[in-house]
Image 1 (tube, rainbow, N blue to C red):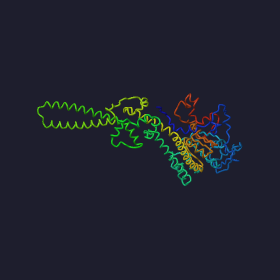
Image 2: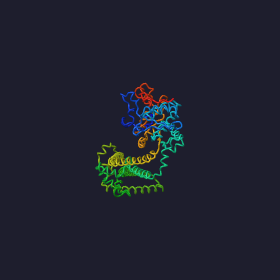
Image 3: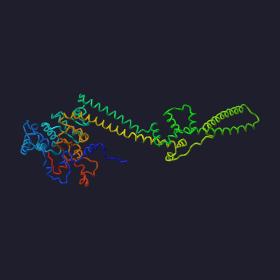
Image 4: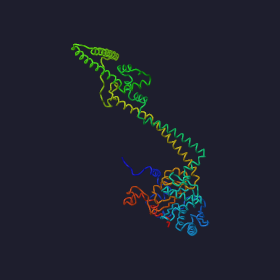
Length: 532
């Protein structure tokens, strides 16, 4: 038995999300490792793609300026960038380092923001989201490593009045106010859409029906018992000699069958009775009892002669002796009747004496080659019965393989249709929100759903503590702008295997599993906006 130190279900979503070609990842220019990559590649980062596709796009920064001063930033103009940086430093709600981080974020499609505790990393992230939403850049996919950090950011967004159109994916929020913004709660509020509900109910009905059909076949395939029809069909097709002998028993067996009251039946029941009669060895039991009765009579006769010899030597006979003689005469009369019945039975069976009890114990291959099933011992019959049932079960499985495959495909299609109906209802809800919040695990689990919402921006909180696999698993194709906020200089992601970590002499050179995306890109030359 192998015991794993990792719960694989917790990492399965990331492994599934990573099963795609590296070049298909968004921002593969920065994320995919290249041997020939130069530091110049990471220093020349383009503005977000949506700033090119929207004609004449500029950033309106009025929402973060003191007294709502007007400030416009053109991400494609060097002079505008320099002027906006100066204005934000002097006349905004941000300190100089936060102002620089804001400008870097709005002019780079892939931005890293680093700061030690107390420098306002979360506040900067909230202000960035305020600017994005004020300029109609949405929806924003907000992910965090922990539920606590995610709840803190979403609650701050609500408290600052930035937007109330948020959806919190996952059910592990400890904030009572945020529970009303969970996807489940939003779905309940949207139940008035009867079109969605009726489609979901139809898909659910089809799913349950397919599940029941598949379950019935599985029970038959996995069942411990074999039906009489399947066994008979197997014997007729695969063991015709055994079947013919079983259905045409010898004369003595027919005589025993006829002597048993209530046995005679018709059709399939007769075949079933014959098989059960043979399997349980009732013919052997009957012959054994007949042998025992004959032996018991011989013993009684010998005993009676001994008693009579002793009585003849007595001079006086009393009433007790007279009674014993009368009882002995009665027993002799019964035994004569039994002997007469047995003699009649043997004559009907065309036998002169009772056959011997079969006691052989041959292996299965000899039994399968021997058609004389009625001459087998009870152990041999049990062994052969198991072989028949196994053969009948295999034949049933082979015959129903196509049916099982069809029902399995039908069930999978019904399940997929049901999930799609539910996802469509969720997509209609998420299409109306500005911010979608979830943990990194939730993002990897709901990749298909998030792809349907087509978020433009990915903002990662606590990015310095997030494994790179989690970041890659959270990226969907529609993302055009990535913002990572964290402190990789303080804490690295946690892994269970020390030999794969940056602290191990081999792991640091080869694996680097606990190196975050922020740390790796910074070392490669991308650089981070510093908060202080």
